[in-house]
Length: 213
Image (tube, rainbow, N blue to C red; front, side):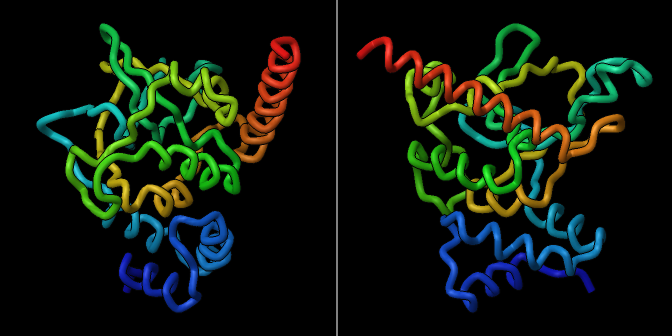
């Protein structure tokens, strides 16, 4: 029998872990090694739900299938085809968002915690009013966000399939269940590159701050 969300959350309570903390990711990653692929897929199904009326809402998290170009193309082979994005907006036929999958595991929760400072509404609610009130421009203006240029992505709407909404109350758990889906490059190599780019961004911001002083 597949594991349930209730069992996971009960585990947090028994281990005396704060679900909003960074610590929970380490605990969960230890536990997830015990789960089968069936368990993980079951957890995903319990979390995801369709978003049919308002396909995309700013400040919400979405999970979908993406087909960037024809199979066999090197660009296709290195692209995450199951993105988990914070949706920031749409312009013509392109949507803009932050793909959490490109962050190394231990930085996912760290980044989401920063986003949650701008969370509006009840954390446990699943209504459309519960969203992140933060734009890309706002991120660029804040020194605490070095990830925004590295994980920022654009997606063509006509190449998106099976859109699902990820409720805020489950986003941290879900971010640890998902992996990048690349054929030619491993998740580790993708995320090592992301870390390198994050360091470059941090150095740029530090130098820019020094010049202003």
